[in-house]
Image (cartoon, rainbow, N blue to C red; front, side, top):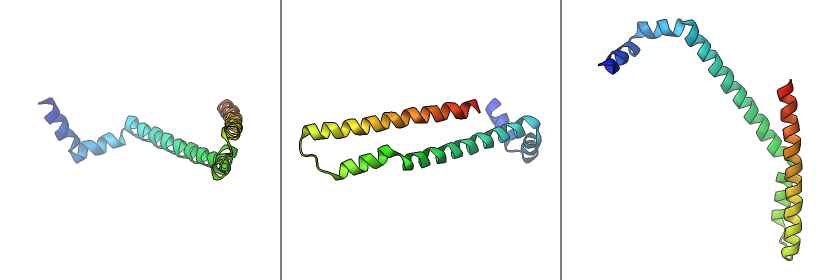
Amino acid sequence: MLARMLFNLLNNLHVVEKLAESRPIRRAAQITAYAITKAQIAGRDASERVMRSQTLRQVRDEAGRVPGDLGEMGIRLRRVKETFVKEVKEGLKDGSRQIKK
């Protein structure tokens, strides 16, 4: 019974318009739009950082070469790991600076 009443209220155009004009609903819509916009900006920034990433370039370069032996492969993997760790540390520093702003 309660579900049917709620369904009828939400399908009533006048009730929906009144709710849309209410301050809590407008504020919730503003907050949602803000969060979506911030997430899009953060995603765009992250994808740009990945594309500029030294690790990505290094992995592409290393994948294009055939290793002579396992020792050489280990050296390559260590270099990629070191580059990756360095970039993660730089990203954390950048993130903490942005949070402080």
